[in-house]
Length: 266
Length: 258
View 1 (cartoon, one colour):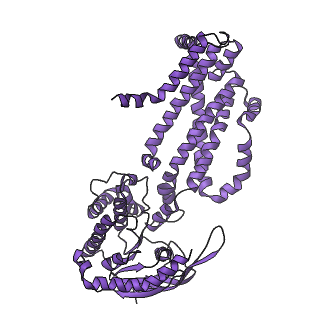
View 2 (cartoon, chains in turn yellow, purple):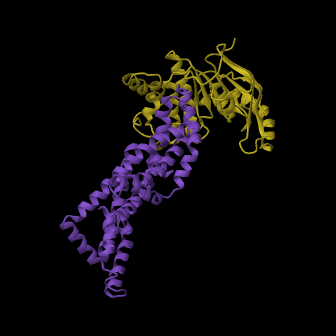
């Protein structure tokens, strides 16, 4: 039995004005093992974010089910942490207070909260910015803060919704490596994380993942699952590996027709 | 350096020009002196009323009424606004009463308050309360309603229960502070209008009373002085709100720039 099992998930939306019913997910099936790093790529607007929100329990399904360790998802749970595309940091809380938030909810005492948040501030390289408000941070720093806020809560599953989409190319490169390092450190600290990483960048997906799922255009299904047979730790050299280029090409050819026809949609 | 000084002085150029034009119109006797006093006469009146203590008494009375009425209005508007913003059904239930209540002009309440409470302190404060209540009340409802959906989702995702006190206290309340404070600023303006209206009619001390008294005695300098005093009172109270705002939501500073 897979750790995360997505079975025949269907999700429709009704557009608020036109009352037009849009089918976002049309029978999505996926199985993800514990500790796996899986990316989902697909044409824009295909429903990748919807799938994450469904797994997070923030949206209900119309059909099918999501089960985690054989338990059906029926609402949000801090064990399934979602990293929002626009960070969704609380602007009225400082970096420190944002990171402590999940702990505060669980009733962890102030002193313990401080020591835990310090640990994660260090992990995501935000030292010296503890007392800053989100508006004082750059995009990359906001995303680090959001990541620390999630990690401090120690979720077993990380659902990452295009976390690096709004970040410039150089910073993005650095953050990709940092994410892998953090993932590895957490594993070594006995806090193994299963990651589902949504992105529209094939290179990013290949660089980070154990496996990449290709989603079709809307209404979306999982079209293909590609094992990424590249050794870890992944570094700059990974990208010059011929296997890397081959995998990217393979994924692109799988995604190309979907992306091309998706342009004609909406 | 020169540039910096100019930048600092720029907002004060226009008031000085207006003051100069006033003085020019006055010394050229464009209007009858009795109907159009110069700046100096107003200044002298200010000194006279300051020295005999009259000014402090009346400004003090008005200020006390405004603050009391304003605070009482806030004590009602914010809690009710929060409740009605949070529980849609409660708002729906109160909808008709609220909208009818809001449509009645503040001044229209004056005869009723006189009949019930006379022309004294209670009536003055009630009128101010009514004037100050609605802007903050509506803004508080809007503040609760317009909380960013993503912030709610983020909180739920981090373990907060839906519709819980935690969600209200940690997310909904702080995110509605900026709109509440904006409402308070508008309320303050209404409170000042209301106090003048009430005192003009009740003739029971205060700035509005002096305004009316000035008219009766044909003391134009008093009338103009009172208008200037009202303007400074407004500025002073606005500053108070501004300070309150910066203490309550320091994070808002950056949001305005974006």
